[in-house]
Image (cartoon, rainbow, N blue to C red; front, side):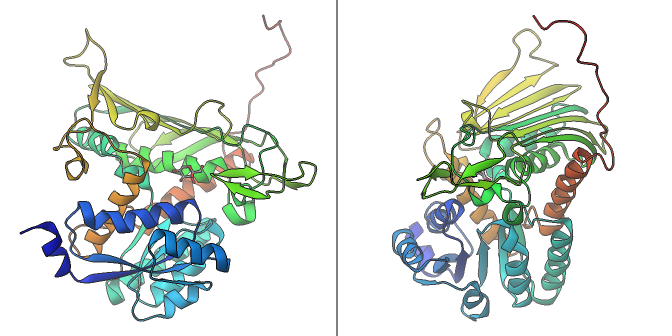
Length: 407
Ligand code: SOE
């Protein structure tokens, strides 16, 4: 039977997506692409897209293939013919939308980080548990990097004990789209909307990836946060993550961190070093992680997302790390795509995320990370902020920078 034949008899799963920004664009592509490349228990239907401005939302609906559009997310939650609410909005609206959707018995896919505060994340977790017991609703948080074939392979290798007992977790997420002090203000720089800056936007990915790969939870942190540019020009034109400003003298305050660095103790004994910044000039999307165990190591950089570096201390001592091209049919997710060696891109993560979510809705697998797991990441974000504010751990100790010349 051809793939198209099975698709017509597959029951529909009607999606309403809230948000028309970068994540809305990539989720739209994921919903339409997933059933073309993967056998799914449901046929996702791009039923309704919700945005804030009429023209932009109508345009997004037409371009990205959504049957209808609306300017009020409540339309999506109240409609009986919608099964899934996909939340692609800034963090300040996640809790309200997710709570209403779960109360209405919808399945929920929510962008990361789960919320802007621990209290919201806990409320969402309780609602997800209640809805799952009452209606079987599935709630998942979009930590998309878990769906990178190379990282999924790394997780398999680590779970098989191939690197042994984990000692070091070293994670950096480096971007540079905010390096120019005159690049415009966006919602990602507003604490009320985004919760935190580089910490929650990209550091949250590193925290999730590190815990998911290592199988260990972060137990405590010692952190420093830094905002290098205190105000930015009002944005007049959106382009990519930033855009342009008509008047660089008309500035808005930046109320979040530009960069974060922290050390972490894991509950399984590993020592972690984390760094996240949107000001690492030349690093566009370097989401890197290296994990060292007593039998070997893995290393990954999203700027080379189709590769995984693997070191086996029992075999590779003379040659060092081996570079595995994670593009073979037997590698996670890869077999659904192109012939070996042809590689995948950023958008594929979101397609894989949709695949896993739809399978979870059908009960074929669990929805990971669920809200409880994403709330735990939120607690780490909160601990980092508290540590950096010196109200718990991580009080800086003076290293006496006054003696001696720097040559
Ligand atoms: C911006 O820093 C951003 O779009 C994040 O919000 C995403 O989560 C990350 O995948 C890429 O960068």
